[in-house]
Length: 182
Image (cartoon, rainbow, N blue to C red):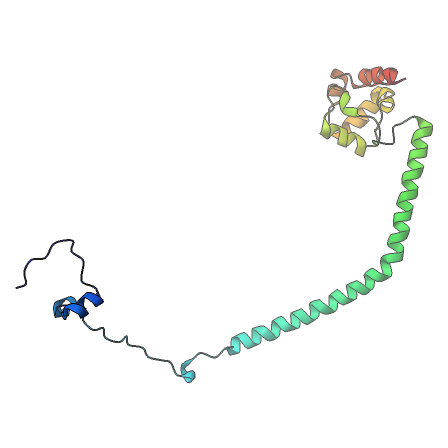
């Protein structure tokens, strides 16, 4: 047996072993490793890059791609023929907006915001305001002029009850707002 070593003694360096003429004991050298077993595949063992199923799928996808490209070119042709009509439509919209502003100025309605802010009337929130706009009601003056029959008709159009419109006094509130704006 070898004499006991200090527990934390460092192993001698290669330079120290060469000068001392000592080599480390055989028990300290690791055993040689066996080479890893590796079997290379032959090129003939590799699976084909595209199977018959994949080739059929590729052909189908290529047909779909060709069809989509053909449809896209047809749509571009149609779009280019519609361009003059789109320009005419835009010009018509501009003219309509100008005419609406002129009409609003002559009738006293506010054209800049599409009418009065109907939410200032108690009981009218954003949803009722939107429904009233869809029914053609945009100003306080229109609401202020409602008769009992018109209240029933508008209530049916906007999904409210005529009793609620009367209880919240929409007509009276609209009349007060019209008077305040004059």
